[in-house]
Length: 100
Image 1 (tube, rainbow, N blue to C red):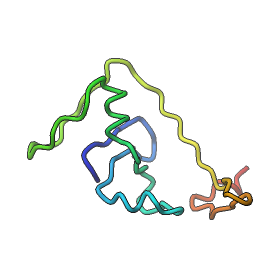
Image 2: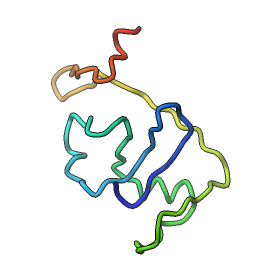
Image 3: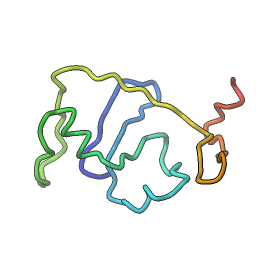
């Protein structure tokens, strides 16, 4: 899962997280988990949220770090994106397009 995960309130139990599998971020289809979101630059987000860099890796168990100020999280689910030459349509993995 990587070095850091970011929990936020939601009914699906999803969270944002780092990944040790960096090559997965190069894939167009990233539906490889149960709805959690792999972040390309998780350490950058951690530094922005906390005002300090991630600590050096240790063997200590995970530790929760409360933010000084709540940060809203907005997720956008897109099944249409641009490509270099056209509009690209992707599979609607979660079945949201039909519900309009």
